[in-house]
Length: 265
Ligand SMILES: Nc1ncnc2c1ncn2[C@@H]1O[C@H](COP(=O)(O)OP(=O)(O)OP(=O)(O)O)[C@@H](O)[C@H]1O
Ligand SMILES: [Mg+2]
Image (tube, rainbow, N blue to C red; front, side, top):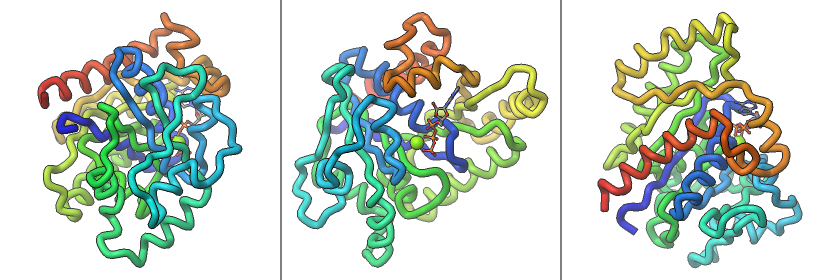
């Protein structure tokens, strides 16, 4: 599919909201009758909880199968019971740690996922890559496989940490000689506590950083118990609280992705 978007979610720190954003965005997308699949490339395989699936999946029904030498394109995808048909996931697995170790000895080890997606294309219009925080071989693979990136930001740090993360991503993409370079759709500050001085300072300085690198800044996602509750229930926020103000943020990102995709058609 030539207008497919492969959207990588990258962050420096853990718990910044990659999986939360992946699920809520893919749900919003599938509500628009567009197809989305989330590949869980995280060894903590937390995605299964966010979509209400059990943890009793055999390894060869997960992403482990995709990295096995016998893989021939039969992606192990599932639609969780409470989700629309056009919402699919490929579950993660703790064996991803071992897979990553094995990748080290492979030639072109940063491009394995990219090649898998080229050789065995997924039919979904949107493919979301959800991985570990920080930089390891899996995240390099995510970067190399992505056509677009979305960067959730931890607000409990100085804004220069966020600036460094963006710089690292751009530098790494250039070192990997990605052609074309993935386009950064936007930055999303998450877990915003209104009135917290560190957060207010962060939000005050962030627009300048975003502007200096020409990247869109989405409104900050508040620390919001309903968002956390929805994850605990294994459902997207929109499904539990359609009128929740935070739903609009996921909708705004989906609007931008629709524009990108429609322009590619
Ligand atoms: N804005 C928010 N308000 C309240 N809880 C949130 C918010 N964003 C995320 N959470 C909760 O914080 C936890 C971490 O979020 P999430 O799992 O999405 O982060 P992550 O970046 O995927 O983490 P990891 O790097 O461990 O995979 C989850 O329990 C999630 O429900
Ligand atoms: Mg996660």
